[in-house]
Image (tube, rainbow, N blue to C red; front, top):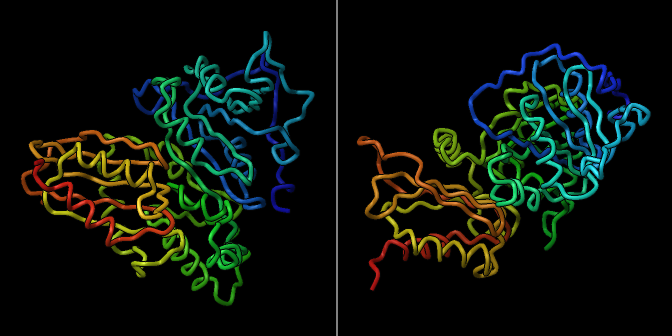
Length: 371
């Protein structure tokens, strides 16, 4: 197994740590970004965590694990037990300044406790189990009032096994329920296509292109990175600002790219991506009711996992951004529409049993005048 061959990161006792790297942050954002790392069993999540923990990147990154294990290579004898009922019950600081800890109780409170060390943290990684659905974590980290502004959800990264992904997808393609591997792709902002070196060399180019196409059939908004042993450029996986409503440029770029990757079958019942456009400005109150009917009531049997878009709102010169994860959504004004821009509503949905005609027609009712 790839994950079991990793050299363990050097662990040192907290009171012996000497910090080699700068504490400076890349920006003045007072909140600490949290990246959720998910992926199916054996895909390489632990390899990615090890790569980050061993890296000489000059960043102070806390990695929250489900438990310390052989894959991460942190000796239990080197773990510092929390005092006074600490919620981060086991933690250790590594030689490169990163922090490794496990959480056994409240994730929210554990994150708050980590952020108390904020002057020493640039980022927090949260590794899930192979069977974990990232949606509940995203809901807690994105708009949870308990966390206030202490942390912010930066992105969801899904690690997939290039050699076995097509088998996993094909096995469940025509079933009514889907394995977590499919859900993890659907919720991802970044997909690391790992173990590309194990794909058949005779047709690796075609096979890898086919894999990326399959991933984008499920989630056309995901940025796909090919890797061997999860060795990736950290700038592509940290500080993505995928849930930052003010980061409009990235969202607009994703919506532009989507039109070239969209699923072709408009009545496909698989987990997939589709987009709708509406040139007329919408009534914001009607849009909220429309979204709630889709997300909360699962209108016409549609099950929406994620949603992103830009809105042209009546009586407003502001471009509004829309994001949703399961039942939670946010609509916020992001910036003024530019003079040369064509004001239009563009919304991308990722989910199961999506019906483009119903979504398009029902959005159009949000443009009508209130009677």
